[in-house]
Amino acid sequence: MKDFFGKKLLLNSAAAEELYEEVKSLPIIDYHCHLDPKLIAEDKCFSDIGEFWLSGDHYKWRAMRICGVDEYYVTGGASYKEKFLKFAEILPLMVGNPLYYWSHMELRGIFGIELPLNKETAEQIYEEASEKLTSLSCRKLLSKFSVERVATTDDPADTLEYHGKHGDTLVTPTFRPDNVYSLESEYLEKLGKAAKIKIDSLSALLLALESRLDFFVEKGCFISDHGFDAFPKSYASYEEATSLFKRKDELTAEEKDSFFGFILLWLMKEYKKRNMTAQLHFAVTRNVNPELFGICGRDSGIDTISSAPDAKALISFLSKLTDDERPDIVLYTLNDATLTALASVSGAFRRVRMGAAWWFNDTVEGIRHNLSVISEYSSLGVNLGMLTDSRSFSSYLRFDFFRRILSDHVGNFVENGEYDKASAIDVVKKICYYNAKEMCEK
Image 1 (spheres, helix red, strand yellow):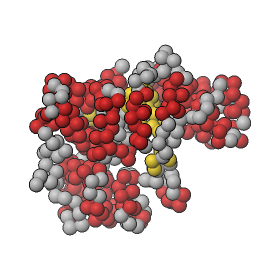
Image 2 (image 1 turned 90 degrees about the vertical axis):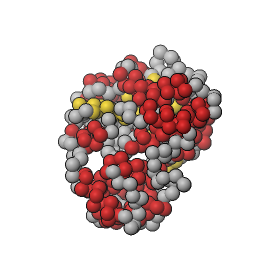
Image 3 (image 1 turned 60 degrees about the vertical axis):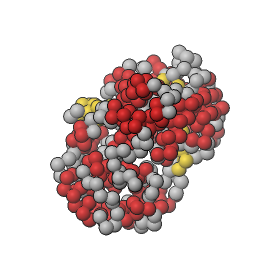
Image 4 (image 1 turned 120 degrees about the horizontal axis):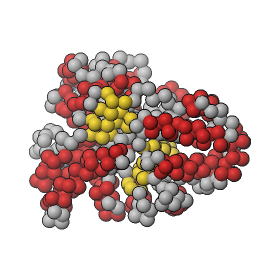
């Protein structure tokens, strides 16, 4: 029987252990996350492990709901201690779930606690962890995990006053223009104020976006992010998009989709001009539970995997950009049923690569599947490795989670005599750190 969360966790060969030793202490570049830059700038401290773990982690909220915990203890008015104790009760039910791994890796890595978390140990762990949190803060946690750079997720209208170098970590913005596609008057007014442009036409909207892009780049932005269900079915021309904007309050779903297609292509060309990388997250359906959405709002654990993405739709999108217009693009699908087809597309267009196993796929088997498909159908060696995609400052143990699984994956080839060890060491270092470093410093 193996030790509970011992040093060899997820490492199933001597080669895997050797590769892990090479990457376990590398700095972290978190090129996609949802951390609040204000909390970093102000170096927030946490009242207890309940606030630290449960104030905004929708992974934990989902698990508690699945296991029947009343919403009062999830996002309701219960104290953070009460919420933590309820989470501790249900954690043993999450066998095989990444939350079980992450929670215990965080207890060990942050607090030095090696007990399994359950109803019986909850009080003791709550007291020990909360006591140790009194000497920790956001910046100290980032420093503890050698987080070199953080790219937060920001709306084009955001002011970005909290970005910059904080302690040992450079915090830069990511351009996330999803709100633009709605064409809602209230949002366009907000964007216009930020850009100091009255947005009363398509040309004014594009000028405003150009202005905000330049502002983001001045603040250190090197990457954008887009989240949507599916690629557009049609792409409006400039003339068509101009006409659609004039009727923005009465567009059909098909017309909005066509306008989305125009803006998406236009933005790709603007990213290319600024040497930015574009991240495309797709196959997600947002806010599927109307009742909970009314109570909790967005980003509260009620998003789901959507239908399998159509590789032909991706091809249609990419083919509308010439090599001179196409920026570096990273693809993330929430539904990996067509992952092999999507990975094959990355070989047909320059500067397109597959991203990490995203969100619901961020599991032991999900990451293994992602690595296996990219290895066989694309190129694992150019992969950008792990990111947190998280609002939690404790989530940096997920890099260790990934590095272990990656080392095991590549180590299997070395162990079986299918790949030389020197190349293996080089490639895992690139995936864990150097590829992302090259991307953000190009």
